[in-house]
Length: 571
Image (cartoon, rainbow, N blue to C red; front, side, top):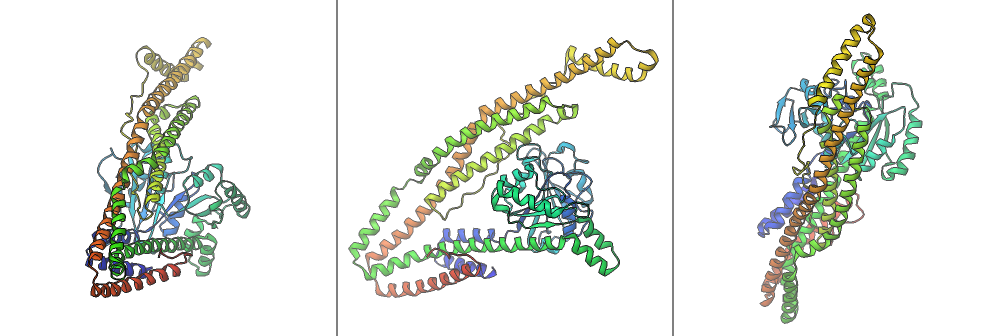
């Protein structure tokens, strides 16, 4: 894989010598992407032991808080320290309106990333960036610990989607005594195609792990067949930490083996290797594209020396005319228009489904705390839906761009909750209804202390109950009114926001296509100029130059084959 980087560096220097600035820029960007670490998102239901297992992988029992779940809408990124960084540390990254990043001690993690210290994510945290030393992280791994899964639309959805968006693989952690639930199956299938490892955790407790694994394979075959290969790994964080504390070396070795953490570490190293291979293959694809661009002028010189100059000139003029007539913006917009109509219809349907889902929640138990957290939970649900919609729009535009030019990669946009959805006021009890609610609360306290002594009449107790029901009904009415306002805003504004997002992505794609067209035009015009006056000495020089490029391409093809692909770079 280092050979791929060395080859890319050699071609980059050659592009700089030939003053092919755009070719050099693309190679440099591809080389940077090819050094990114492997990102593994850790997902699963509440209380499955995700954080404990991450701690066991890193040999740090108290690193991530494990007493309760990760706070809603927060994920924790664990990686190696930056180059030159001496101290281990953590940084709180806030949501868009939450403030500047804040450095915190590792021991304060629970105050920001756990439900106990940050209930309902009142502190507006996006994620916490933890930097610690460990060989697994130093080898090029980043772990993303997410909240307990409750589906792809809900309180935790935005955190899971944000963490998973750029991940290379997922580590699905579940209780070993039960197969993958429908919720977890939906989650793994919904996160899209990526490698998956399944940890059946807490094997120190009773349960038939093998049966759970077999049933999980069956469920995956039905819901996510691409993931059923696994691996499926029995694990126990508790046994791993017991092994650390065990003074007897033989007993400690048995505990380490029984914990399964060593096998999981090996599987994660396999993910790192696979990611590095994929990055090297992508880099070699860019190298092949660069070599084709660099070869074009020399090929034109050779054609001019060996062919009929008027015929060559005529062919080049036709190609120049064809390229000049291309209108990337119009052609790309035409390809995107039908997808835009489909996405708008799908957005409308999803908005209605989300409103109905949230409305149904108000018919269930609706405590005061749930009412207080309604705005944030609603924002998270709409944010998750919007992020998923923007990702679909990006895929549609990227496919249209790829159809016009397979070498162009469209940048992925950020997709937070759009500002078009203004958070309305959550109407509280006021006036007479507010006084009645306060009176009901006061009388409730009075009943508890005096009903035995004074034997309050049943009618008063019944009145208190009626008042309490009236207050709960008002709470539900307020919640439904709030949800209706948010839905009306979303239905009115999000289609326009989606059109703007698609227009922005289409504009980016068109600009990339224009750059590629202009670069090709420049090369062909240079070819036309060269073919106008055939020169045998220039032809010989071009042949030597093309021979160098040919040898570089042979090396790229050999490296592609060594990396296990069935197809080398394009000729």
